[in-house]
Image (cartoon, rainbow, N blue to C red; front, side):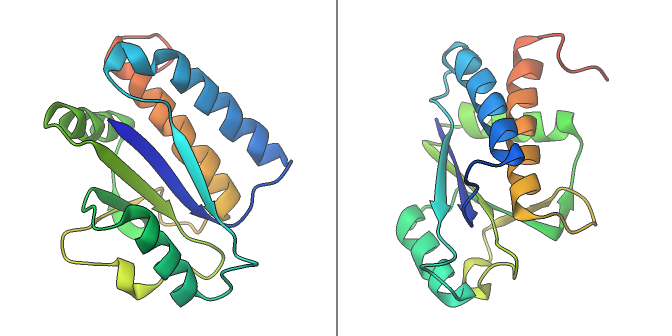
Length: 156
């Protein structure tokens, strides 16, 4: 299964980029043991695609008609790390080929992306900068891989 994070905004050479790279690298050392491909991150440049509508169109081009999409939104479903791991495991075990996670920019996401069959998850009720949200999501993906393998990283 391919897991792709689509994030509005550029991360550049920031502290957050170091965290994202650290957790991606950790995940990518475990992914083959789980039947997963390396984690991919696609940035939608908010300088080039300046409005939520243009960003939404670009995201739609990337995902095509794939319904295996999760939008991260403060109004979405909150879950534990164990619940998120169960979600990823079910996606993998039911034959999902491509799973997309979408993180909006400073002004959120275009409403056209919020369709009936789309899952909406939350990192909490607080609003997080998209760079931190990206770091938090990559950490949770790595944590889930660790949980699946019984790795001692996760302590519950």
